[in-house]
Length: 98
Image (cartoon, rainbow, N blue to C red; front, side, top):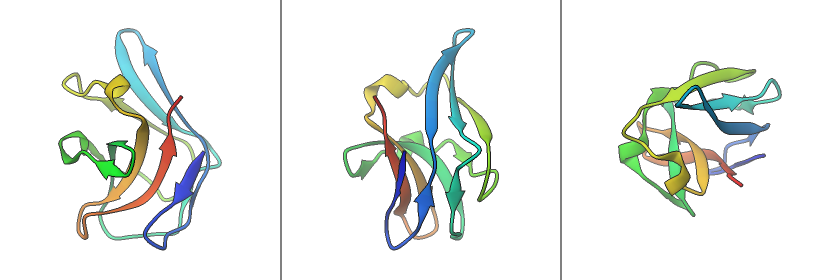
C-alpha cells in the first residue's frame, strides 16, 4: 500500500513481480496521486531514493498502470517502490515491498 510523502496524498496498491524473465511493476486500479510536477517512478531503501532507479514517467495520476523495470535495475535490492518528483527531488509516495 502506498503512503503519501512531502505533503502529498498517494494511495493504492502496488505489485512487483517477475513475468517471462522481466520485472514488472503494477500500480493497481485503486492507485491515486493528488498531483505534482514531473512525477516519475523508481526504488528506494528506507527513505533514501536511488536516483539511478528513476526509470519512467508516471503514466497517470490515477488507475492501473504497468511498467517494465529496465534490466540494469535489480528490484530485489530495494525495500520500497517510490513515486518521485524529479523537478523538486522529493518523494511523493512510497510503498514498502514484501
